[in-house]
Amino acid sequence: MTAELAISVRGLTKIFDGRKVVDDFDMEVPKGAIYGFLGPNGSGKTTTIRMMCGLLTPDAGAGHCLGFDILSEQNSIKENVGYMTQRFSLYADLTIRENLDFIARMYRLNSRKSRVSEALVNLGLADRANQLAGTLSGGWKQRLALAACMIHKPALLLLDEPTAGVDPKARRDFWDEIRKLSAQGVTVLVSTHYMDEAVQCDFIAYIAYGKKLIAGPASDIPGMIGLHTWRVTGPALADLELALRKDPDVGQVARFGAVLHLSGTDKAKLLALATRYNAEGVYTWVHKEAELEEAFIYLMTGVEDNFVSTKS
Image 1 (cartoon, one colour):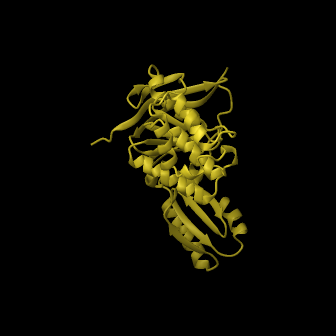
Image 2 (image 1 turned 90 degrees about the horizontal axis):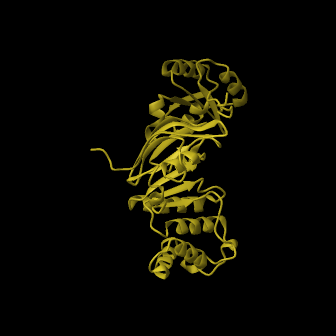
Image 3 (image 1 turned 135 degrees about the horizontal axis):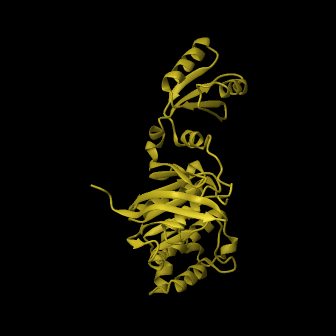
């Protein structure tokens, strides 16, 4: 049985200054999913999400978000969306409570006082309610921003690089909150180029320079590519890295501290290479499951930037 869809779009295209920043994009997002849009800066992730959610009109394409037409019912979509931008955009000279009250007024919420109090409790902000927003650390500003964009109880949450500039514990706490919202049926779209955010997502779409390269359950992405990876340890890895980069049987080489990860789609050739090096006894080659980061690097290899204008 097909899961209920929060978003279904097809053929989305957007052109800025003669350049296709999003090119013929199709996507289906299940209700309650955490869907990550992964790709380099300038790849069209945020533009794609904004078109999918009726916040930006596409030059071509169509679809529905939360049951509303993305072309003709944009205002209805906006009323049901919470949008958390990368930069903190609330008022630094207002307290936490005052910021939330202001947002509640903007949404014309009934029982405003109780809704603000509920938001303070839900995000662990009650003890800091009277603290000026400008004095908060990055992690607490993040909590306030999330409380603000959820105060009207939207069905869809948009996160644009949500954990940039916050410490690991604050990042972990933030994702705990996102998981709770997802379990309650809130659909979450995440634009990111950070792998530690991508691994939190149920589904991943890789976007590079306006085009969707691949999309599916996060755990399935390496297998969908057919990627095989070997973990290599030993002395003088820099020299080995240079040699392997010239080897036609190696699709990619990535350095992770004192370890090399070699990946490619030809399993037999990589196995032969590993066998030969292991026989020499200098380096240790161990087969490992390919992960999202190797998949991401592999997908980016050879992809051309679309900065060139489409104007004749």
